[in-house]
Image 1: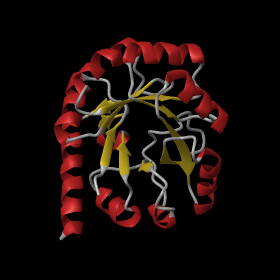
Image 2: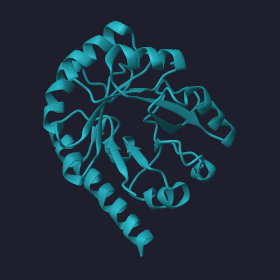
Image 3: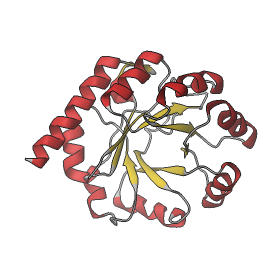
Image 4: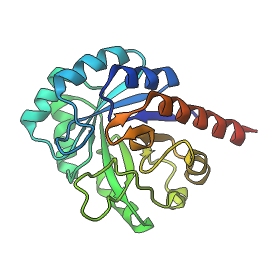
Length: 219
């Protein structure tokens, strides 16, 4: 099974180049002002050019207004929208129709019961992103470097398409793949030398760890 890999929160040419060289299927740009990974739409549009034909570009927003989304879509020309806020199923459907783009809905997970939140979005969201619930007091809905119990996902319906996110890094990706067997993974803070600062060496290390884990499982 092919494994989609998204490197999220990219802001520099070097980090994007490392993600593409490693074989990222998706590259994410974050449009949330409180995040250290925030990038403005024109800058993201410039970076996005290098990914055309190589990886899908994902615009990550948090309860964004129509006006801001209009600007993002016009300037960046994303392949997919990722909604990481409290957007309702109706809002997801509305934005899919407005922009004609697939939408990935992020949901915070800490226990098996949280997976019930998927149900209203089934048939509306094109994909889910399961991220750990943020620590108390955090202003960021994601990118907190926190993991959840990946074993929760083992019993998930095989028809649910999702990305596993939250606290992934080169040291634990083997366990994540073994325990959850996700169709896709998403990493941000796990390849940073400081909040919001992507490290090309850590990105390369992460891809090596993914390949090693998959080779071990195949053997």
